Image (cartoon, rainbow, N blue to C red; front, side):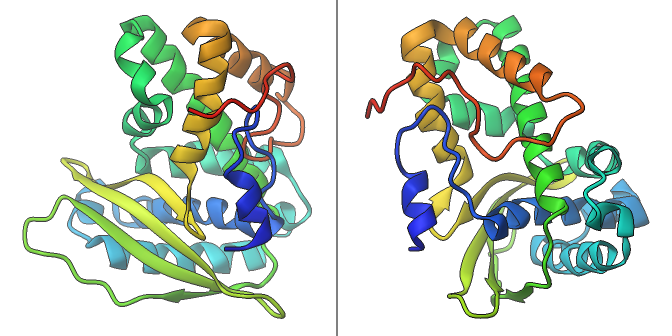
Length: 244
């Protein structure tokens, strides 16, 4: 495991140790939306998860190489891209439920909706930031197989970069009535959802579910119009490392 990903395992007030490459890899999830944009929801629903990941990742890499505004760090343009193209390809309800973990059943319906909205905003900023940091990495797609009728699969990829060890990236995807959706990403053995679950749990234990919602909303509001957050940056600084 890379040293940077070892840091992610710490139960900090939302972890802030993803490398630039790892942040871009999170942004590569935006590629999953391009096939739907190009062919429509009905066509995308018929595409196997591995083909969806491979085809759209290759397409988004081509866009990143050509789009001078994104390369120059135009975050407003990236926000628009993410909002229009990425959101339909994520199961944010499932992701938020997993990130909140054992505290999810305690949340009221209103709290759940607020958590989903704020967590979605946090992830959008993460992906938008990462899309501006593409630096000619290459992506290798691992052999994929699935049993007939499977509804939950993992698509494995590996990102190669000059002078460094390859970074494995696993996309956890589920089959829905609208096609395959991403509900987690595992980077070099570290789950994005599990990473947030640790820090969210710390915040909830200290301030309750409403406290987590307020902290996320405040951080998202503070960063409106500014550089997007790194994964896990900016949670309540009074939090301490408290392991479950």
